[in-house]
Length: 136
Image 1 (spheres, rainbow, N blue to C red):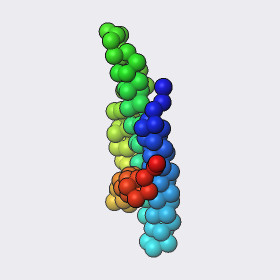
Image 2 (image 1 turned 120 degrees about the vertical axis):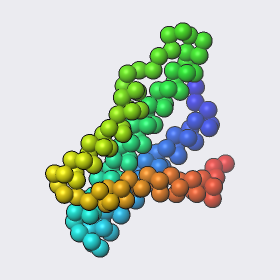
Image 3 (image 1 turned 120 degrees about the horizontal axis):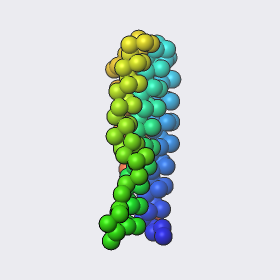
Image 4 (image 1 turned 180 degrees about the vertical axis):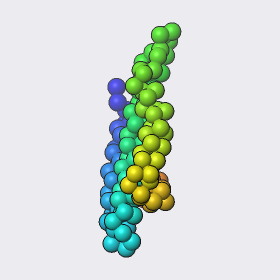
């Protein structure tokens, strides 16, 4: 059963997901042109990690909500193991990718951190859109 609010949340989640990739791509191309290919690659890697982080968090929280609502009265209410992996594995994935990218490819950690900020900028942009152009 989907309510009007849950549909609106899904629209906003998709908007944040798309904006993360778009803003990351724009920042990456800009960094390539202004600085170097390595800096641009670092920004793109960071933006992709931010997008993957958001998607995994979204999936894990959706599973958590489904379990809590669907089995509220049940003693067997358990979160699927994949949700646990997505919830906590995203930090490990970011750490491993940043380490390998820095140590093997010699890409600046700072450029990756700038790319990770794409998710924050996308969230703020989507929130401003919701405020300035509210749905009826």
